[in-house]
Image 1 (cartoon, helix red, strand yellow):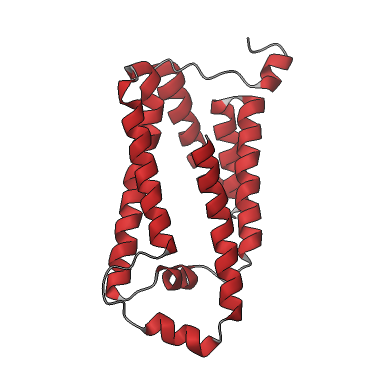
Image 2: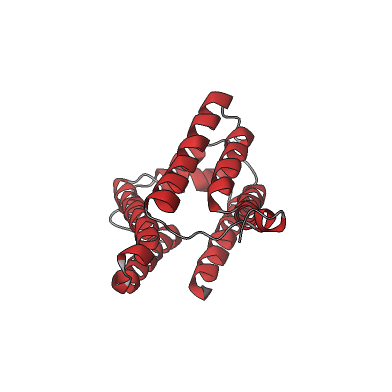
Length: 197
């Protein structure tokens, strides 16, 4: 748990520090630095962080190898998917730097410039909101509700928001709760009104 909190803290602080450093850099120097080709693989802060994520997920998967099938299915599913995504991202970071393309320039071209502090606060707010939703409503209902809210806040159309939310709910409820019998605890709100145990 402490390792995860450290990873979250580093993930919160690094973008803020980077953004402040970019404001101090003159525009001409930044343009020259971004156009200069990278001679080989470059292990900077971003790539090192991605490598640490790959190591963290691999270690978590290794530690869970002795779980029985019922207890290990959920952690194995999440950790395997996270390990694959982190590995692909790490590999793309290495190859992009080798070709001379900075990942930051790709992200800047794909997204409009915004204050990273606001983005970090929004992300943390959504994560905390999802935790509160899971605690109050239980895992399946919180999946449905928070997915709808998140997609609508991202200005996704109603039909897509409803379909994706129902698909997420069906996956969690159908596969994990009913199909595999994973015992998710009931939400506190349901317990308080007498629907949970």
